[in-house]
Image (cartoon, rainbow, N blue to C red; front, top):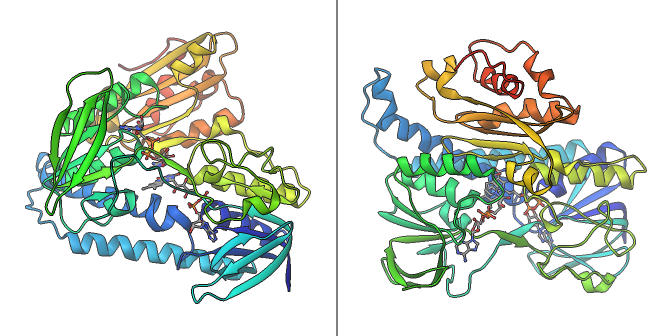
Length: 465
Ligand code: FAD
Ligand code: NAI
């Protein structure tokens, strides 16, 4: 029977980073993945294909409007087949890249569905039904997550789709109802809105994107509304009936009141994701997931000796870069090193236009924790690069401790916000004060100057505006 130092179940950002790090540290490692390609949700049906469509649709949208303002006259014609093809080609290249990294780092990819069969034992069932038994000193669960279901709304990936279906619609919907104003709903809603769909977003709460700083979320909602998205907040979908050509939805106000009927050509259900541990054999090692399906861990150790868990299957933000951090730290702990993740410094980015990016605490979290803070804020309308590019929507906001000036949270809304937030992740990892950023020379003209001006604003010495 094949013996390993580590067997990782799942080949997504958690699993493949764990496998590669284990290989680098000289551990004998296998990664079990049942999908036909490596890369998990992120590379196959998540981060990568969604960003490919966001990029292409943003350019199409600009060609339909913004280009003319810059003196570029074009009449774009959508070729959806080619747009999907370039997405698929990028995804294929990326998943192949992981295969290459596996070979380079001596990681064995065991193809098939993995099941824990007792302490130190994993059984892998291949597509042809054959079963291989493996043994390992350490098993790492990296099986990820799946879309959460909603009673009364059956995903058929024909008329009623989840995120995977919404990445491959065969046509531009005339109308699309998105259930859930979270990151998936707004990113994929934006894609189809830009390509011509009428998009209505139904959200249970009275705000969009829970978890995002409140002021930023309001600005974000205004921007999306200006682009033509319609929001029905404080509303719940109680049923959806798919016909041949459209879907009829029943929507009720959360606060009570008359239900209404909505019709749409397609519906995207995006109300969150839940851990995926189906058929994993957790019971054979005495692991019981919590009420929401998460595997409970202490520094990635589960309640079963020698069994570890990382990524979307455990608590924390369901993000690829968080899974990657978990992976490296977990393997380093297995190898006797000092693996560590600071979850306060896991940034979030919504890749819409404008982009929204943040790290650390929101104003609401600071208020709730009773922490006194000072705010510096700088609008892109006063940033020269933004003005020159006619991209002045949004702002950068820095929240710093009122006593020590340590940066506690940063919130940026505007083009390239995702690129700008990295500077603040580094600064906060070094426990920088807002003054540390304020006194560092930034290149001119760049949008990063707005980030610096926001830091200067904490002490009230913003130069422009
Ligand atoms: P996954 O990527 O889900 O990988 C788990 C893998 O395990 C899967 O390949 C699965 O087939 C395999 N598996 C499961 N059970 C078994 C088994 N028993 N045997 C063998 N294999 C098994 N995050 C970001 O940070 N940025 C983004 O821009 C972003 N965009 C997203 C867009 C969409 C549409 C979606 C759905 C998600 C997005 N995410 C994004 C979230 C990101 O994809 C996840 O957080 C990330 O993939 C989690 O990594 P993971 O390794 O924990 O799990
Ligand atoms: P989400 O948790 O971001 O948002 C779900 C939304 O649905 C919330 O606003 C919630 O209040 C709402 N909701 C819940 N039940 C509802 C109901 N019955 N009716 C109406 N609204 C309801 O989840 P989402 O968008 O599905 O994304 C899942 C995860 O995927 C995210 O949490 C994120 O971690 C990850 N992701 C990250 C991306 C990125 O980093 N750019 C992109 C896409 C996904």
